[in-house]
Image 1 (tube, rainbow, N blue to C red):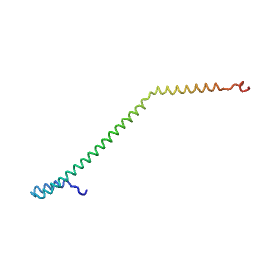
Image 2 (image 1 turned 180 degrees about the vertical axis):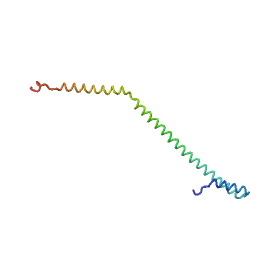
Image 3 (image 1 turned 90 degrees about the horizontal axis):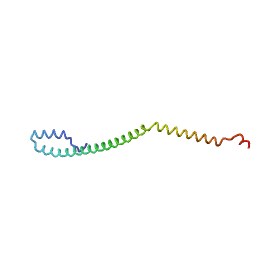
Image 4 (image 1 turned 135 degrees about the vertical axis):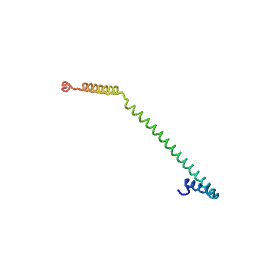
Length: 114
């Protein structure tokens, strides 16, 4: 990007300047080296922020996974015998209520002739 320093090229040119014993070039490269350091530190900070965001998202997903697995376990662990007994009891009670109701309302031939 514009205004960024290529750290590897900078180090190579600094090496050449040192081998050539070029004090002016070395001084110029040292200033650029400070810019490269700031640029690297900024990218490290950006990377650290991204890692922290990913870790937070991962923790949230782990919590959600745990809650879903817990709920699924609760659903799977329903006592089938107890639930079946409750359903059968409700059916028997319903039949008894219907039978009782039909007997109470059942008209007889004598009732009809009156």
